[in-house]
Length: 302
Image (cartoon, rainbow, N blue to C red):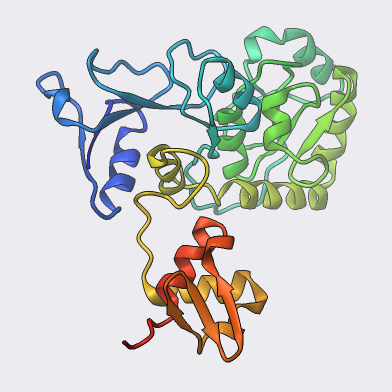
């Protein structure tokens, strides 16, 4: 299988993840590339692709105009994918870089899209809270004042840097990213922002707790997971490009399904496994469990 990657800000990361998979050849497209040689092309958001190339897209925000929305970066985008004709849209969180940190979370405050929220900035200044530029190293608290139609990426970027995000409960992108009072704050009213900021600025322990949980909650996302979702033909069944070896399959089966160890000494024959007087029909199992057992249980000698 040969996969093309549309040039863009995530192209290198996607190409690297594809190159680590078995039976996949990947190339980043250029103007001279003949797209007819590719099984399909992967693109992010509205990145342009050759007109004749089948395309699968990874969608990171709600303003994307191009179709298809094959895999989305947050749950609130799934209805949009379905509305655009994707029968079984998949969600894979947007990976963000996690830079090394040398200082604890700082008490500085920044506002996302600051120039459009002057009233909020004035209210904070009245409380003697100076608003900093968003890239100031002293920022440890980021406010997303939007009540709807937000973007998950700047929130995840801030959280990866151990910044506490304050956002609105009505903002679907924020609600997909933040669990209130666990890895950030989701507020019901804009008028609640000032009190929340005042508390976080003065409470070093609470700020450190939320910042730590924020970073931890976004570090599990990776481009291998995104690529795997893009390579799936559907959301169900065994991934077509997933390679199972006997040992990992047996280990996964034993750890995830507690009763699996009973079948370690079983024998596989003609769609079922047998252990003494017990027989398990693999046709009654889901595809992933069936594959794991078929490959981890030894075949019966003929």
